[in-house]
Length: 336
Image 1 (tube, one colour):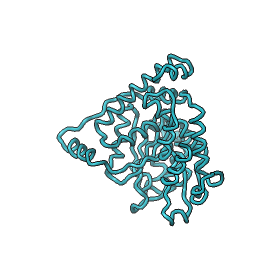
Image 2 (cartoon, rainbow, N blue to C red):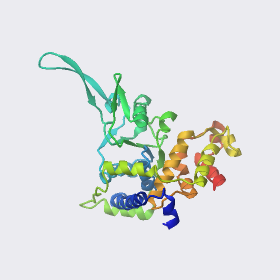
Image 3 (cartoon, helix red, strand yellow):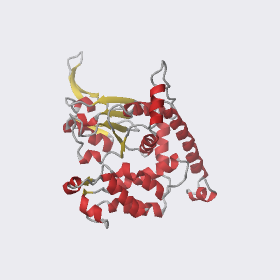
Image 4 (cartoon, helix red, strand yellow):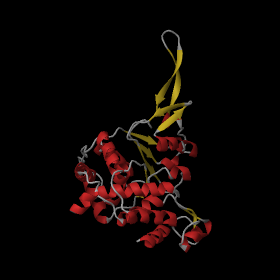
């Protein structure tokens, strides 16, 4: 960390010290997560970026890769009130949001009382979210965007911080429903969870089949996480990084892109929410790495998880084997 970079950060010694302390806490958090989650370093980093940015996360991968375990571990490490909902085809919106019930007092007076659903927590784990019907999936839309829900015409505020970490099976698996574009856009990132490498799988096999298992420590509480999220928004972003974000996002829209592959293959591109997500994400990533300001490398590193669920290919491109990942690689080349 150079003195010039430190002087650049609003000239505030308190701010610099706060970033340094946050970096120490995040190192401890990653070590705690590493005691129970093996071989998912990239996934853990992108998940921490999402939490620090105050966003929601969509984890996609086949069953058995540790997605559920990761969410449970995050709740313990950050001291968050965590609840889990197993999404099934017969799950109803009221099963998530809650409902009003008619009660009669001892005096015979009748009144409605709202019974809160599991969404009233700080970390909601929506397990296998794409196994529920579209009607139930959409019940989370307002909660994710406004941090409140409306039931029977009355608004009910959700706790803070509030994060939805959803797991999803690949759509080609039986009994799944694609998430609508409006809900996908509410997710800050889509993180793809791959199979572990041989060394990581060996460690998983040896360390999770014994008599005892490691338990992660609580490193931060909800107040500390809220303070960290506020601090992240104060991290300065240089003009070169701002330009890279705008070029990347606007270059992914077929109407305005100068890249032929995008104009030919992309049906719809990322909206302004993608720019907002990238701006927050690069700030969070730089703090995780102990840097006081993000670089263009942060933009390139986070382009895939931020953009991949905010773009769609047209039919002709899919028929030709074009992939969203390939399009994002081409966008990154154009701004590198």
